[in-house]
Amino acid sequence: MSQKWRIADDQMLILNIGRVCWDKGIVDLLNAISLAVARDPRIICVVLGSMPAFDDTTAVYKKVEQTPGLREHVRFLPA
Image (cartoon, rainbow, N blue to C red; front, side, top):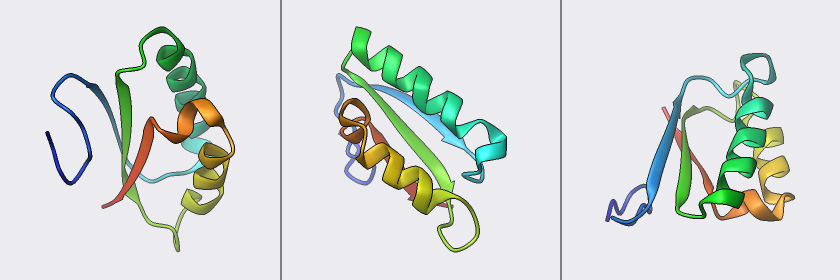
């Protein structure tokens, strides 16, 4: 298990690297993760590059927290 990312050996990792910005398609990614998780709950998405003071991380994080199917499957990590 990856302790830092909280990924178990039997889970599948989807990694997004880059600034968290609406213009870069983060909503499309979250929608895709939501659909994929419905088919396979082992999926975990790690968003690497989150910089809350400089991008849209705070708003995107709130959206994830308010979406029950995403809350357990999306993690944000700073760059």
